[in-house]
Image 1 (cartoon, rainbow, N blue to C red):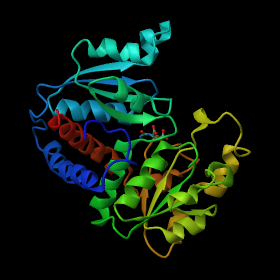
Image 2 (image 1 turned 60 degrees about the horizontal axis):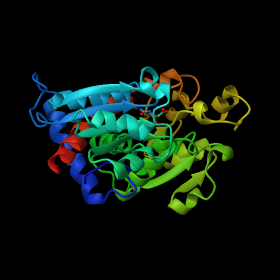
Image 3 (image 1 turned 90 degrees about the vertical axis):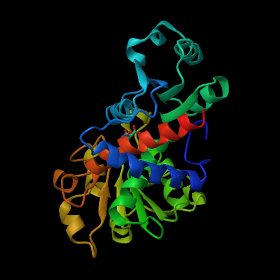
Image 4 (image 1 turned 120 degrees about the horizontal axis):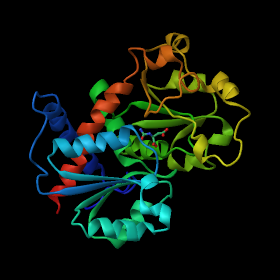
Length: 302
Ligand code: NCD
């Protein structure tokens, strides 16, 4: 693997390799000295054209803990504002001898386009509504760590399936690892023909919660919505918001996940988000280990 562009074309053996490598790195980042010299000769540019807190910090920490040299680029303070193209911007960064590009972009396919035109390795840190492979890998890692296995587990993705890149990458990763996936949301936020991906589909929150072992709750991506898909956030929350009382009524204790950022009081109430059933901060911790594994395995191929 030279690039990590998505989960769709990533062989299952590679996914398993990333997860087992991440387990080693999780051990490393919990030591008093959290650093290894593996990427000492590698320079990485983090090129973010969209807002990010977790993903950007997580990549940066992963790179630092592998001893890579890093530069950070944020579109809002760059010459992109002066009219430079994506390829020109990236080629200028690469002229300064950069080996890997971690890119987040609002356009679907931006990392794939770069991968076709440049020599450096490209890691997709989220391309529009399409894929977010490292998020899916850390989600899979977190379920594996919590439940001991992914095979045969039932994973429900709940919320804005239509605009969420986490949803698509999650569908691919969990199916490849042998889990069953259900998507749940209002009809307007479920892509047409999504069942063609082999997922179960429901518009009823209770049905999804009752069915699953793990609920991965997704934010409403208002910034990607050009039209109104539901009357109001208040109404959305009334039908699709999850609170602790609902979780307590289920036959079994399910695991609650969220990629962040949470909109408290919309998709999750505070009591649910902060409950012991939620592994949301474990996901964040695991994100660093998983990204270390991805960068390490990509650097090995160079
Ligand atoms: C997600 C993203 O950016 O796609 N966040 C993340 O990377 N942790 C989900 C979201 O923005 O809702």
